[in-house]
Image (cartoon, rainbow, N blue to C red; front, side, top):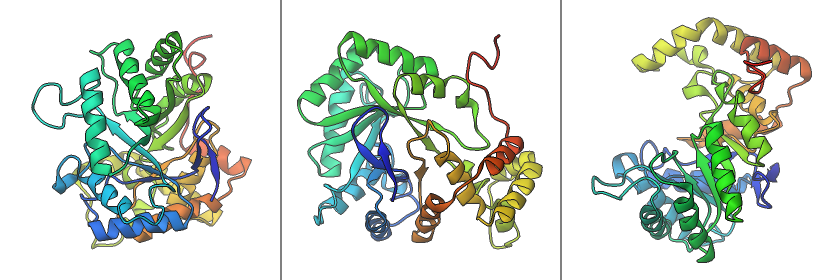
Length: 323
């Protein structure tokens, strides 16, 4: 396993993040336990979840599954860099969502209870809260750090100027602020190259891409399409048709390189200097094993240039639209 630091922090994390959103939604508890054990066996030490995840088990269900896995002992908690998130409404009652000081306190304690742990390594804001001032947010996080309940703060789905604003407010308070940002980033979705990536790099914020295969479009979808037993949603079919020509050429390039399409997509992210670790969200053990293969894929300059030609990116802002 390869490891790196999470942003400018001293925390060492694996180059892949185990995403747990499917646990309790698509993956039964026993299988979720097996996947987490296998992830540890492979050296993955960075697990990501959120208080809203749970699917049919309801909000909080995924954290509860992880908590019961930790409760088995065997060093499971000690070996895990644990990341969770807050923001989404956990009920229809006021102050049961977003980033008020009250909700940060309540949501954190509830997550700790479900996760059966005394602290969270990376506590992330799942979305920007436009109605709560940063001084209030950081004051609540400072209290949580002082109490030993969290170690680091991160964000998710922020814009570049959100990162800049958050960090400036943290600096005024002599607080560390954000060490990571989770964003949609893959070969088909490169918008964050405009402003978010430059802002993250300038502020020492590590990037954790989610949906690295763009909902499966970069995972060999045309090969799977030939399997008549595979069903795709209407939305997925529409997105595939919009990109079919690109995907055809992409899968041909992956064949030429001698790798599975999904391995190439993950490997491309691992070659991007701003990226700390992409999130893989396996539903099955086979999907976990597939994700791990990308760590061994090396893309040379020619392969990277051909991928950029297929999926054009952006020059960093403001250079992309100013002179």
